[in-house]
Length: 306
Image 1 (cartoon, rainbow, N blue to C red):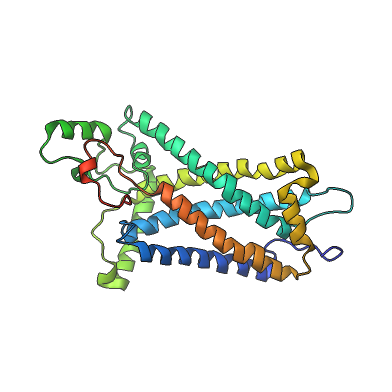
Image 2: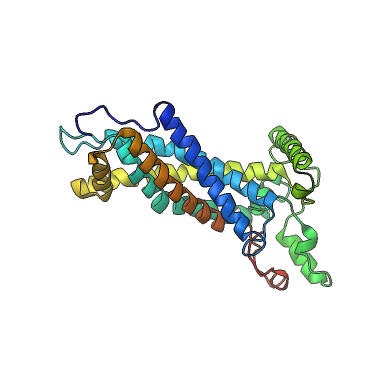
């Protein structure tokens, strides 16, 4: 492609078609995977899974925006000499692979360090509903009855100490949380009427809790992608022309393919595979699991899913 017009990333109608279509394919693929596992290796209900998936989708959207910025920045900084300039499409796959190898584990680690801090501090501020929502990450309603052993007064006391009780009417995030409860509740009711018995669920869901968890997860994703994105130019600075990211981008740039074919292949087909792997990884580490104690161990199901 040397000497031809620069191949921009997701430019025009074809670029947007790549992004929208293949993102949907990636998420639908993971929904099919869950459907095959549901009830066997994954005990979550469809409602909880879809809420988890929406959180991951918001994180993916944020990550995509940061990755596009990183890809353009890496393309502008790819001058090994005055005659070479690699375009954004060539840089997208190296940037996306770096996202999977560096930024995704970093984001998961940041999230769990943050949750561990919140759980430690939460004992001192049980009246803060948003703190309780984060302490129950991956779960959208505090089920006190299931957390308590039926015939043990000491167990009931230890559980009360572990899980802070909050008023049933308390709403996290004030008016924003109330809006989330109303809008998501209306959507749930509409879906229930359309699907009838096949979609009915008696699970109570605190959509304000879900909104709190989603918001902080997106913040962790944004920070991890910004930090992880610095790894590519850092390697380029240290390794110069021997950087594996630069070598991969140069190989893609020099392929005798059309710009559209490169988009569909490296920012499309490969992206589906990486997206599904990323969803599986994030879902595995972030879905709700009971914290194992002497109280909860006898009640744990065979699967560790929520």
